[in-house]
Length: 114
Length: 116
Image (tube, rainbow over all chains, first blue to last red; front, side, top):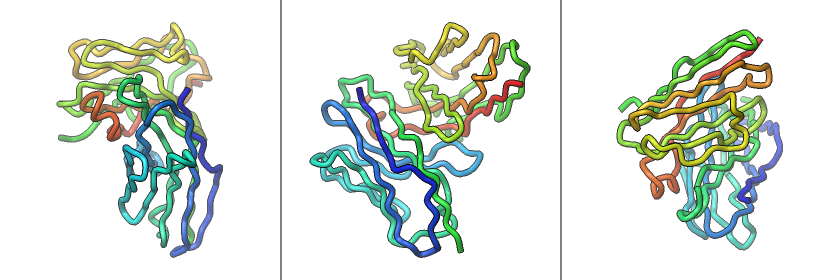
């Protein structure tokens, strides 16, 4: 079945450091891929998405590229801020002919120190 | 539109009691999803509705759990005879339809359940 594996945390960085959080997936067909962010005490917010191979999703300085050849969707940011401290979830949604319920990774906690 | 609303935000209950949570999706969204999230884990799919029809239920949804969406608008999730293992954050999400679902869901802030 469809699944997502993401880099275990926690990740601790200094402000302005470069961020990479790895995510790989297993799916039949052509899933859509997502990164969600969860701040303390809140629900999940969609950060960015990519719906087909080679698409790049971007938002708020974060980027991720849908790599079908490596089944990956790694999250990157060139210069993190303290306000980026949160838990990040990689997720996939199955092809439109599938049930397409969203499947999530276990999450990676990011802490950015000033 | 105020987004997806969940009520209550927090619920503490004694083991064996019944609890009910409510979710109000974005008004034009016809798909509604329930997820459960335990500490340190990603959300796990429980069930989803298209309009008032419950189309899929996870094996995680034991017979103590029931969900309804009577008029295709708000939804309720009831847990009967709660157990300590039911302690978790219960998340609701909605989307416009199957195609829109491929563009991401909108999540509510969740209901945190603590069973003591």
